[in-house]
Image (tube, rainbow over all chains, first blue to last red; front, side, top):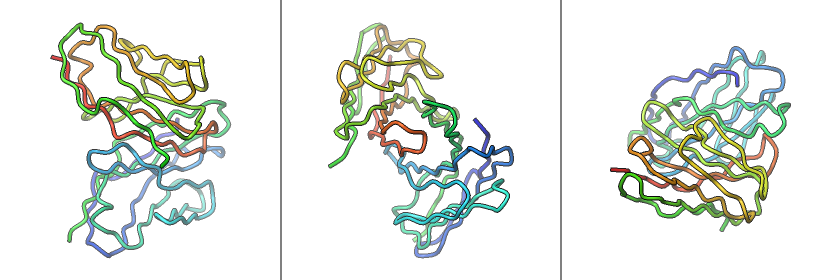
Length: 113
Length: 113
């Protein structure tokens, strides 16, 4: 699995946008970029995924660089409930049955009231 | 409500006393998996199953067994627990397909004395 690099921690204020970066300079052409988050005392939760184009859903937006070597998860208006560890994960769709999620250390996001 | 249910949520037991952690999902998912989460090591896969009667080892299978007799259930068995299996355990499920979001349970915290 290709490696991702994320900052250990970030801090933001409630109701402000948050941009969580992820570097994946060795990404292959068949790697999708997935984001999960883990709220305190809960299991990981799927957030969003994409390949090349920017993606939006009800939880967040994913902005992918043109060369695909980095991506940014955007929380448009953070709430206290968004305080969590955010994981950026690459998943290769070519490898049959490769459904294992490889979690790094993630970014611990703190939201200030 | 679609969910992955793990039981028990917390367990303190002693070395050598066999235990089973149950996992059940109500989403008709083919894929199920167990992870353990340890400080500094992140989440690591123990075992996974692609369908009924099909199971395979993950990255850290030593000391664990699993079975998949029914599609909805995927119990994790510790035949002779040891203190190094003290950890936070998560069960996950998804449809087959690398881009399918995985759904996680809320975790089981095991303490082996």
